[in-house]
Length: 161
Length: 261
Image (cartoon, rainbow over all chains, first blue to last red; front, side, top):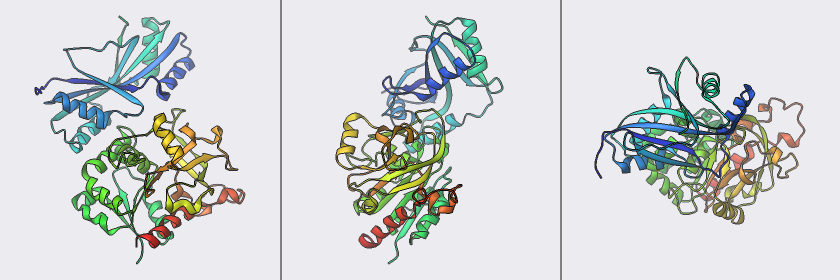
């Protein structure tokens, strides 16, 4: 398989048939802050993996480190070559530049244990996929007041297609 | 010969001292070792009869509770652990140790040790960390070291965010039918009850063992209730509530003394 220094994007989420308590809690939090119309929330943990990684390295990272095979599922793709469209309003929350990302640091360190030596840099982010009767202003309010901490996070809103 | 127990310490372990005390009180010689020293010289594990992975938040639990520790066991300590298991020696995982054993494929290990993960301890049903005391019933199972405690109801704390035991239906059936479920959350009278299940675990499962019964893990912390006065309300609790968990450690040490030492 060809070696690539491009960036691999990995999405991890709970399987459809398993209760995802985080997604449910986020929906409750949004309701508690008085925003109506959110019918479904899905939380997706995202990773951007940089380094001379082969596809089999990325698969091994997903299988052994990044996902729990019993309750979660994963998908990965090369950034720029393909994109996975998530169905609904998407809020992408990530650390501001300079904020220490302990999860990313753990991925780099743990990758060495499983024999993936070429992973040089990791960024993490969280995707909140919202469905329901929503508009940009509502989603922006949810992102600003509920999902992102303005001191350490940046966020981006991606409207549905 | 005195029973020798090794307690494993890794970055983030925080229940090691209580676990050392529990095994010492139970009559074992105990050594506390950091995982790096064990990786450097894995033959050290051969000197022990019981290997215990205590609770805590190993490696920050960043990638899921016990996940990185599971990788360490699987990739860097595989051979010594396989040797340890094949000799019938006992492995105990408490809380984070249990999570690591399950994620390393050592529990329940239906297809052999380290083969693949067959169950998990997912985020609690409520989505929050639980910190409370629970009643736990010891079952009659293939875990011979603990069979003398069958039907005993223990009282001990749980402190975890990821303790919801989940297994696919085919695996769960085997665990139920073939005596792999060593501990269940129960009410004060020993009945299985959803209200007394702190995390939404399937079938109120609090702990399981492997096929040979020499690897056992549980989410609650027996080492935190080896003296009845460690419960914050011990003067006001009735007698049954105060069944302390030292018996559990004694049962393991006694079994090791009789069969292994």
